[in-house]
Image 1 (spheres, protein in one colour):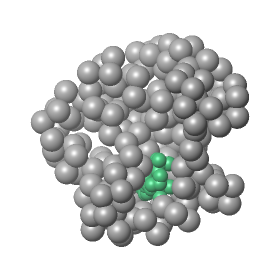
Image 2 (tube, helix red, strand yellow; image 1 turned 90 degrees about the vertical axis):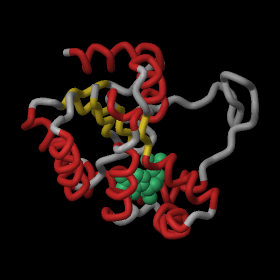
Image 3 (cartoon, rainbow, N blue to C red; image 1 turned 30 degrees about the horizontal axis):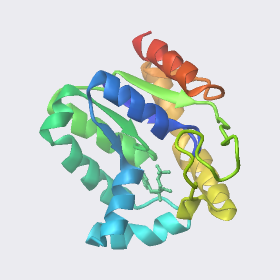
Image 4 (spheres, helix red, strand yellow; image 1 turned 180 degrees about the vertical axis):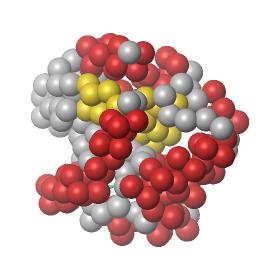
Length: 190
Ligand code: AMP
């Protein structure tokens, strides 16, 4: 199963991609997580990406496409994958098509999400384990605004492309995590 999760920041893509990837036994390929790891490790990629990420802008397409090409060439991606946070621009979607075309495969589904809101029951405390929640560096208000704007301008045009291809499925991201998970499974199989 080759899937893309496409939705605005905060829609819950990461949470849902993690769970479904585990069930399908395919890797969750999250470019944001990969970049954050590179930043934390101070690699050349991390040093290049950090300034873009801190201001809520997209990292240049060629950097991301190289990252994805390397990741999808790993043996575990042969079984399929869930792309979480990629593609985010038309050039990235074009590059993905070329990559998959070279492998003789194509996308099965693209799932998109309505914006969701799932605040913790107690402010700054994790519902699940009770530990203190920390805000991601790029989750500050000004940066979130910028990330939403970037989504609207550069990423949402992809919806039209995947709709035309007949692979787009829309899932309401509001409500319980388990309910949304079930909806995604229906959308992916339908
Ligand atoms: P995310 O965790 O997916 O919201 O990604 C966090 C940040 O990483 C984004 O705001 C971008 O700066 C960068 N990023 C992640 N994925 C991509 C991508 N596919 N293209 C460009 N930048 C990306």
